[in-house]
Amino acid sequence: MNRTKLLQLVQKTKKPFFWMLGVYVALHLALVPILSIVTRTTHSAGATPRKWGLVYTAHVVNSSFGITLPAWYIPGNPHKPIILILAGSSGNKYGTIARLTSLYLHKEGYNLFLFDTRGQGLSSGVKTYGIGEVADVIHVLDYLSRTFPKKKIGAIGFSMGGATILRAAGVDDRLAAVAAFASYSEMDYALIHHELYVQTAAALGRGSPDAKKKKVSPAARSAQIVLSPLLTRVALKAWSFTLLPVPSPRQSISRMDGRAVLLMHNTGDPEIPLRDFHELYRAAKTPKKSKLEFSYATHPPALWSMDFKYQFRKTIQGFFNQELP
Picture 1 (cartoon, rainbow, N blue to C red):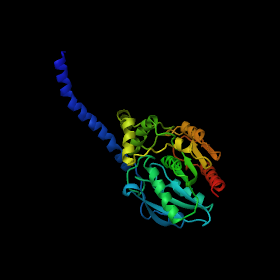
Picture 2: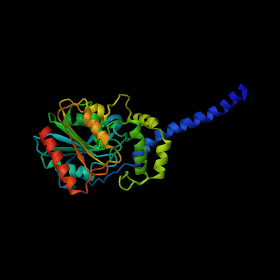
Picture 3: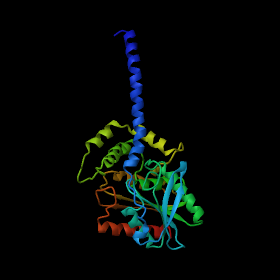
């Protein structure tokens, strides 16, 4: 093929190539809000802590870019600190794990503040899996500092909620003690590649992977192959509406000198591998660090197990009683 014909061929294919590239990039930008919508779980207006036997007051925190975060404040001992409770990606503030955690900590006299970050529960906005959510936590801390001045504040989060809490602790030292269950260490390409499968499977109604059942969703697997981790990360950053760098959980935990941190994880977690848990613990520079591994092969807490619930309750009560009295 001579040079003239080659140039003609390039000219003919250039426009379709850039058009397809644009569509491919747009696909990733559209994917983030789509997954945020289809993986969101909500609760009815009547589903409140009153059904748990707890008194509460309703609050609304305004976050960045007009995002609103409906919240519940459950008062305890007026002399005790406040503990934030954050559910995971497919949970919300009325879910079972939020309820049990609230009951366990309220029994110890703690004041509790439950809210859902952007794109979760009844909160507005688009879920960005721990990036933009850091701004939500900081706005909540600002709100609590104004509403309940001089109170110490701690936090506990699960999965994405745990990662969000750790990331926020790295940029705001008002979080005096934090606990995280099944947090990722870094939002690297390996994690995004795996989560493309997990979140797409959840959106298609297949749920999270199970180490024992080993279910495979062909559609989710196809999405994992076709979609780019790099472009997905760019899209998540774009939808977070922040240009500032947000430290990863591993970077954040290395900055928590003198503050207390508790890490918990299931040993057979098929979604966030146990190595993330060990990386986080190694990265923690604070002498006030502790960890606990549960012998289960699921990503969420094993709420069906009485042994788990007993061990979990004693661990979080003991941690906050010691580190956030």
